[in-house]
Length: 290
Image (cartoon, rainbow, N blue to C red; front, top):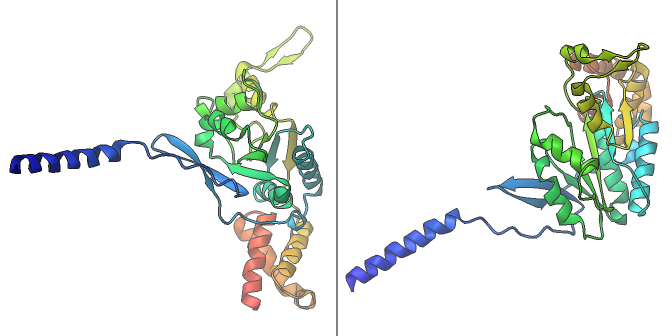
């Protein structure tokens, strides 16, 4: 009897250890959420709801009127079930690329728009994500922020196929919006210039490496470029955010030499005049004034 009890205890311990090795059941996504992150653990991916999405209004994004109009129009078409393009936003850092994507989510969430943020290293799971949302009634934007690749990365081919190049078509309720500091999403090297060949009449033919890099960015139907702001434009954005943070207009105008000098010094210390830098300065200045 004692031997049997000892055997049962050992069996229970063995079962408990075995259970820890089994994959955890994947819980279904909370489809009531408006934003998700794709997470991978123990080799299995899942959609985690973002409980507190970053809310930013499109009207708060200054100095990018043309880009804002284009992405808003494209997203409105998409939400309405009309044809729309995948979007690539490239250019200077801190100029509002990611904020524009968050802004369209805030504007169109009540009309069924949803956002799925996917890290570059998890882009290999794009086919799984597509299958997961293909039959949903909502409209999904897969958001890849600060995207760049080396040619050997598996996510590169997965994204390329998802954009345009797989035997399986992308569902009509999904688009891909990506931001990058690189126009072609991959590093460019001097050695690639040696691959260029010339035709009979002086025509230039890019080498295979360059063609490979261009082929990915060309799969995005809409390109939006962002450029650094000049000084006056930067200061206008500072004024906008000072007002948003509760600094009264008369206080800003009365103390113009003070805040203007501080704003320029703030930008100089960071080596950039951008919307992000203006927002950071305004937060600091408004906090000190209050």
